[in-house]
Image (cartoon, rainbow, N blue to C red):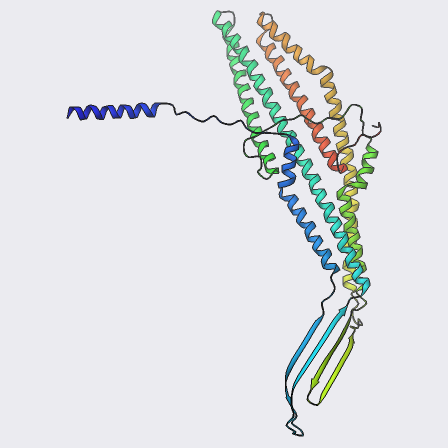
Amino acid sequence: MARRFHIAIGLLLFSFWSTALPVPTAAQPPAPSHSLDEILNLALTRHPSVAGAEGLVDQSRGRRIEAGAYPNPTITGQSGGGIIRDPSTGTELNEYLFSLSQPLEWFGKRTARQRAAEAGLIGAAAGLEETRLNLTAEVKIAFYDLLLAQRATELAKQNLAIVQEVARMVKARVQSGEGAQFEFIKAEVELMKADQELTRAQNAIRVKRVRVDTLTAGALGPVFTIHGDFASFDEGARLEIGALTRTALDRHPTIRRLAKLVERAGFAVTKERQSRIPDVTVYGGVAREVGREAYIGGLSVPTPIWYQRQGEIAAALGAKRREEADLLRARYELVRAINEHFQDAKTAVELIELFEKGLLKQAQEALRIAQFSFRQGVSSLLEVLDAQRVYRQTQLEYALARFDLSAARAKLERAVGGPLEAGSTGE
């Protein structure tokens, strides 16, 4: 009995010891890192808006085929037995009637419908290009926004490391009796604030990562990083706003799409006017009855006497005026957007130059001097924390200025209708 008890105790201890041991876990693979070009390719391939625009192109292509089709003929046939009753001769014969009718569409109406369908197809192709252009700009802005969040997180980590070092120095001074307890409390408060700022920066990365992943239709997954740099303007290539405006009004897919809609609406008006001329139906056939055989042919022409499509013509004219107004409004919106984003980019360039020419170095040098003086016991904790706060704020504002330039360039490319090309030196 005692032996069984000892065995049971031994098994229980072994079970506890085995469960208490740490279970080795497989090393987590590093999060995949993607560049801007990779994310753009995924977005342009997988985003549903592109698929919808491609479906509209296929739909317009089918309508063009429909517009070029000829009306189908109508074949009529009937048969049955027949007997002569008066006078009764006993004659009995199988009777039949076969006829063929072919509508002949008025060529003016047919031509207008075909041209309208062709304009619709070209407009749908421009709409696909417009969708890709808008999606490209949206992906770039989301990419740079996530890149800004990553830079802010890096700065928050650097700030936390510096504050931790200062807190250790303050703690050592307090323990040695060279510093006041109040400085240690203030250092701890700054340390807690720096840790909270890092947490907020990391949460911002998670939110902005979801936005980028959504633009690729979930192709990136929940955990990933990006690598790259913000966009910039070449120093020697200055863009002239007048040339950008002319380029946009000539090649922008939105303008081309709306122009084709106006053209299609014009052909729709022509079609309705040509539809006042009726279509002709030619028919012919053969008939055999008891005691009679006949070959028939004829022509059917509707006569538009009471109504001559006044309503359809008025509706088509109204649709054309609406499309013309949309085109004019789009031209004004493009001009406004180009001027706005051009000035935003210009302001961001000037601000970046201001940071790079002196502010960054000055803030870094002020922090270095404050830290050195604090180690030597010359400066106070407040001066070090102020210098650190100014340095971090300067770095953040510099990154924000670079983001503003990148976003303004992406929006300017969307307003112009494509990548920016270096022009003559202008504003």
